[in-house]
Length: 323
Ligand SMILES: [Zn+2]
Image (cartoon, rainbow, N blue to C red):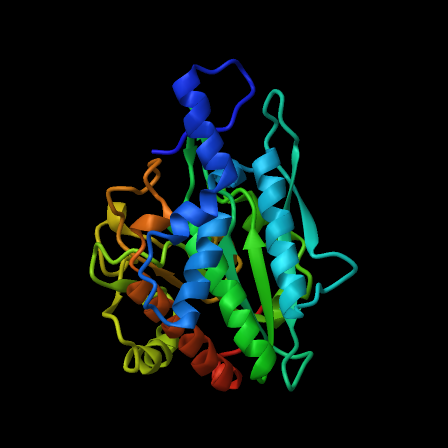
């Protein structure tokens, strides 16, 4: 459990806890990880600790914490050399009106140019918002979905060194938790024509090994994606399972509409969603970086990267869509 930063008078004990949380959120989180892990894993965990720190105040859409998270992601994108599509990384997102809060949020959109730029495009997406602060407690959302956001940054770094054939759009969506307004805004006002978007690879909750597997959802809706995903899965160092979609489960266990890929699916755009089973910290204050299994998370990011490369290599074999 984390103590929220707030401005009303605090009891002394709360003030001491607050001071510790404000001064050293990332230091205390980092020290929980084994120092012997390799540099890639260490970087993943440092970044996920930063984005899910108490100072981000749970990244609820329309809040100061959300703006702070946005600035952090844009700074990371700039540092690795990623570029926006237009003049700005930000795409405004209209949020449902809440008393005392902004009515505007923003998606963060970047583009990695492919060697054959201008044709079919891959969207790689995650949502950076989470649940904010409730009753003075910060919901940090490390797995949900800082894990997807840091995967995007890590994969982007590698794609900038080893360019894909096709353009890749990185989409960090706002307000998934409040009704998927970010991804709905994106498909309503896409930065490239929807006809060019061949697939959405949607990463949401990929870092916890409680369920002992990473799930891939989408191949029952788009069967031509099955051999592509199976190819990447054959090289994974964690268990990859297929399902959680309408043709394979009971309705309550169907993840077809459980995250931002739903907006793409609604437009007939194929998707593959990657995520873990719900765990005891799902939508709880305990969804902290310290609960992540660094080895599982690194393997999940590696699988995500490999999946993107296989998709990129076979993108021209995708069936054409009629708008
Ligand atoms: Zn999520």
